[in-house]
Length: 190
Length: 190
Image (cartoon, rainbow over all chains, first blue to last red; front, side, top):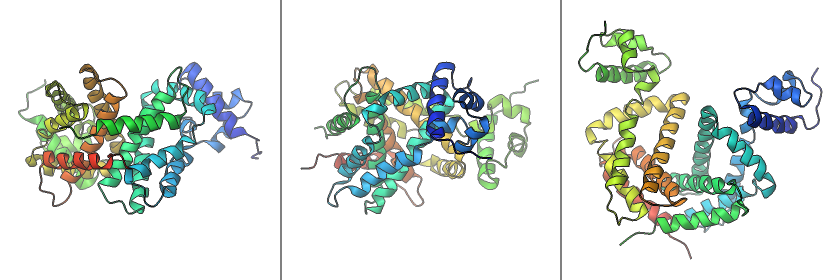
């Protein structure tokens, strides 16, 4: 008898993160998460395959906003500008209201090696996805992979700054600055 | 009664790779590997913690050659030139004689998601290790991480080309070309 639970998914996600942060990921069960918001373990498993996936549930949407940016970039944009466009598009996925959530999520991930591996896999998929979208625009290899993975590196560095204590700039602003650092770093030297 | 087995480690590694490639990683046991070179399973576990680690046994040395390159780079080298120095140093770890081994190893890894995750972790550690070595040279963040991870991307792309069918150029030559691609990609556009 599967009852519809309004907002159950979001409530479970918020509760899971709070419990992971307070008790530790390993010490929290799916049943603990469900009970803390008055739901059953069975309801939990209607929404998530396991407790780890609660932290990675938005991955399809996350990757989608980057791909959308690649597709929407002007036809005459350079390869790297197209990647910058993808990152700017993705920054809409991380409005400032989301910063406390992202910060807490990162704390949980940093404390657990298996979650770190899962996060690496997510970023590797992101790089592969952006590279595929660039090839669809006619960009050949190795440019597509090189640009896509460089974009993922810029995103990772910018994201790390965005969730740092006391940081107040938007993700888009930080991304712009990190791209600038990258361009300075890669200027050919005499 | 631990007997000393001359070259046992190398024989086990070569046998493991052949079996993984022929039968599949999942279908090969530590006992199979040991038996194929006339050793016992017990001997296998004196050299390796598990069959997966046979494919990642050289990781410390692998990472070390990059770090050595960072340390050995001229004091006045730019950050990105230091990273290029690290990659050139690492290419000595992959002489052309090693190409068939590297090619076969990649085939095995590509066929198995858990090995792919392990390889991602190895590359993430490599990026973190190079970034730490750059910080030791006084290079501040985010430059250290940005340059280190960009270097890992260049290495990954170059390595992929090096093991491609029919490729005959040295890894160092390919790395040089990929760095050149990167510099062209990141040139600011008007």
